[in-house]
Image (tube, rainbow, N blue to C red; front, top):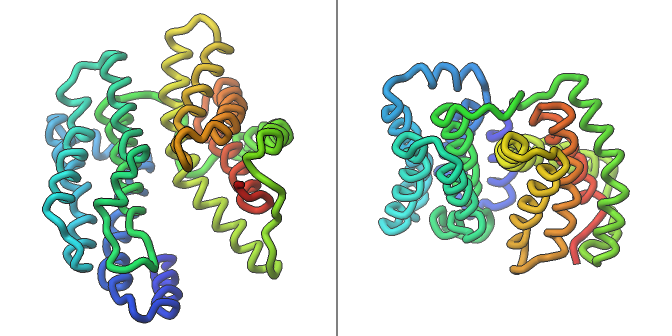
Length: 314
């Protein structure tokens, strides 16, 4: 229903772009279905019952290609080189934990591969829109996140702690408390290094409210969900399991989180990296104290939504 509503809006706004209805909507519907399925524990348990593991990886790999084919063939933007690149990337990602042994070095390699397409902005060159009204690379971003979720939680059988779309009421409260503790230090650091400036979102109250709600759940169910799973549920969890100090584990995982933001705009974006590292510390503390990925998801989302509504980057 949300996709249909968005399609009506964009079709009226861009009447000369029929590819939005013909190509993007059906591809996004398929991709979102797979994305939701990857997060739901019932679906992951059902998928995990398939044997052998190579069959699971093959199904995962095939599912990654279908939305691209639906979109590119319908929009007339199919390119064989882009398709071959997508085939290779998704094959490595899908079969990594099936072929290679479960060792820290190979887990580290998996995380490097997980970050590479975002750093290199690969999906911008694969999912090509027929015009410049809308970007289509959201298909690739959602696909990559859910492949990583299934590869880690099903094929690798990694245990990050409680992970789902919706926190419990105590987790909402805990995440909000860590947000209250984090927001002032983060704002002071961001203003101090001239990463952002005060610029509240202007407009009618209903428009600002709609943007706030949409931004919150968009960040919560995509950005925070994926980043907190990988940086807290995997990286921080690994540090906690192998280092004698929880403080050191939190700091190191925050440094890694900050380093990943060096490519946020123009490399090296050290200002954004520093701000992200501070956020990573508070999210790491939230994860350690709760044992749940959902708590830092709440903290992370509230901070980013505050950024969206009250600040702008220089």
